[in-house]
Image 1 (cartoon, protein in one colour):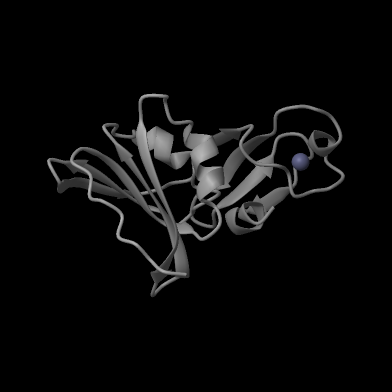
Image 2 (cartoon, rainbow, N blue to C red; image 1 turned 90 degrees about the vertical axis):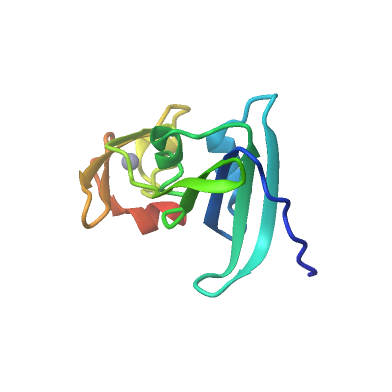
Length: 148
Ligand SMILES: [Zn+2]
């Protein structure tokens, strides 16, 4: 596949190092507004990840809370806030204390997989990146959850 250069943005947010194939799930979580100009790049070559996806949102600066909500889908994402074509701020994503309705429970016997209900996970340990399902009480690592 030929790789095209994605246009630089003047003001907004760039999310880099999204695992290839996950860009649409990340977009679903970020829920762009109808006025946002969004560029999505897929399968960019990456030394660290082989292939990666990238999102650029023109005219909107995502907050740390907003970007943290993608932490389970793109745990190693790098977020840059762009102002006047320059990187004004760089951050990584951190798993929030509580994640509601964004990911499914990896436990097939969990009630959340049987009933139409919202999942809730609470961060147990930020250093080992473990989360507990509020319903079945099982504990999963962030990587286990990202692969569901
Ligand atoms: Zn569960």
